[in-house]
Image (tube, rainbow, N blue to C red; front, side, top):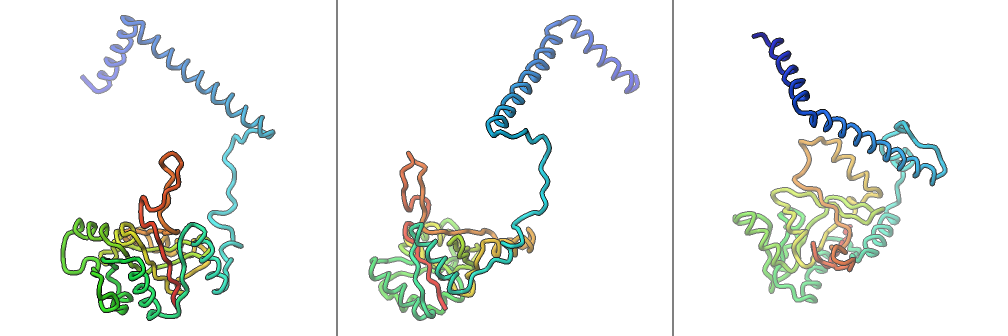
Length: 265
């Protein structure tokens, strides 16, 4: 039997099934009617919205004269003083803390002072060359300092250490003044747990990495392509905040409850 003969036989079997079981045909008619009723209700619903808005329904997709941010926004930029002022205002408005420091020696002194003030006993930091220069081991003689992924251990071990830490210390890759957000990228030397799990997070922001708009940070990441994306891109705007449970605002549930951004330079 040819394939054509097989199709004819299947068709005849379907017709035979409908003849011997009328419910098959009735079922198909019922589904078609149900679909028609649903579409009628949908049209009535959309017409009702248009009527309340006092405008005709939009039946065709609107034209998009441009994609992304308009040109005026792409060229918008604050001066350095304005960026510092706006970043500070926005970061503090959501519960964060900002300190303006002249150099890395002042960063070292700030961390030592906060560790003594808060009674910190365990600090974890990213494995970054900028942080090597702080020599935290000598600055914090009474505190145990761990460097992410240094000296072996599994990822689970390091996550556990981060969860036990009083302070987590990272260097920001970028910061956006308009939203008061700090960007931290992940890699094997920069585990995201360092910024997510300790009680207190200290983010060191070199002043030259502070930009006006978030788009200035996102565009280069997009242009680099998927292959060049880091393991993680994390935007931090103040301490962890959650209102998931009965709309009750709680600080520090999903991350550090205290966050410092140190603007350096």
